[in-house]
Length: 289
Ligand SMILES: N[C@@H](CCC(=O)N[C@@H](CS)C(=O)NCC(=O)O)C(=O)O
Image (cartoon, rainbow, N blue to C red; front, side, top):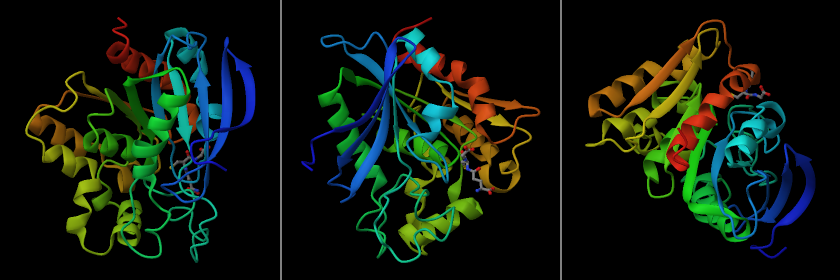
């Protein structure tokens, strides 16, 4: 397969737009990668629309968000495209890569691994920022100057860290139940040790709380939106939103962190607040009031 060629795997009409699944040969990952795209009815040749890149959590793939989050209805109304990549390489044949649900396959953590044997294929940050987004804004009616970023859990970590590391690419950011301080929780410590090595000083560049704390200004003056369920079984041990909240306050980054009684970590929670997230991005990408 030619690296720049998109193979359309399926296409379905959805809220007046189209839901598509694609595969392509990724040069950054060195393997075929799948992803999904929702194009709203406003996306036409000659009429580029803003797009939101959604990063899913542990154990998910390119289907999870599109089938469970209920985002297409709002995307169609607002004129936003949606892009959902897979959460890791698949088929890299790294020994043990499918043995853990929180490390390896389904758990790429949206960074470029520096440690053997992961470094060859586990390059999700470069894949998304240097390959997939440029490819899609070249191939589809998407506006490269109006890209927003959001995600859930591990993907919320990905959204916050990639937004802070690539402020030139992303104009708006939000997250559902993000892993806010991966250097200080078991999921993050396990992933960073495996992908980046045992020296915690190398982890800080991929830790949203550390990245925000190191800023001198406000990287997203339009504000960051985070929703967190208070019945989320991962909240106390893994997510630590209060640490990111303090880091934002210290650099005066506007943050709306909403804590919702009764909601857990799953997609019923995500679907409940999806409209608010798409409108948060629309306000910044479309001057939507
Ligand atoms: N396998 C884990 C749960 C993994 C999990 O909750 N993954 C989240 C992201 S961190 C998810 O979105 N799963 C897919 C789903 O809920 O459909 C467990 O047994 O506790």
